[in-house]
Image (cartoon, rainbow, N blue to C red; front, side, top):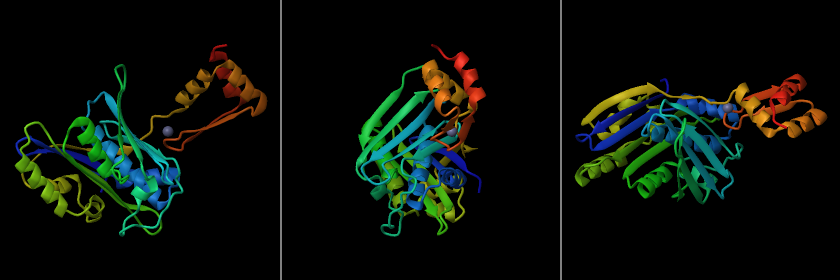
Length: 291
Ligand code: ZN
């Protein structure tokens, strides 16, 4: 099952529902960052949550989630675009805790802390930023808490990652079901009680359900599908961006690197891609840098 995200409306357009299968992109994130199982689950849930929330915003913005806590993982960053590109990392990739109630203990790994949600314009425009306390550190409940506190939206958010005994990601996915203007309490209660009976997102994905099947399981037949599209792990870093960042350090800083290390190794924190710049590269950048 390729990674995909589906969007739908239900109950006459008063309930919005999204679901995603993200197994491939979460496994790619695990490989890139070498995360241990609990860290993999935290990163995968955050990446999936970022994709789901990004699918609800304007097309000229990207969405960024920053979870920070006092637990051993310290923090998770994930960002995604409405087009379905996601990238992210955790601060302590080696974090692994004993499972709690048969599940990877993401809440224990994050601990108590804050969730910062940002919507960043791709070109010009104002940045939107909201900070809320973590509800449980389990990611899904934290995102629902954010939607209620900051956007006054009643929502259910489920995100899950199943990691095999060898550490690889076998299934990952999630859903977001939210009340839209005009939603009746009766419809919301019906959806909520249905969601409570449905298996977890990673179980649904393990059972071979795609995003549209997941929406049907979650919301029922009253579904009008808006669309389905691929999602993927993709970072925006490039050699050009790394060069621009070095130029921005200024002439004195580049001269000091040339005088000591004579080369620069830069690793992108979002995707772990390593960029090497040798003496000639740095000399070229020196000419572009301001005094
Ligand atoms: Zn990158």
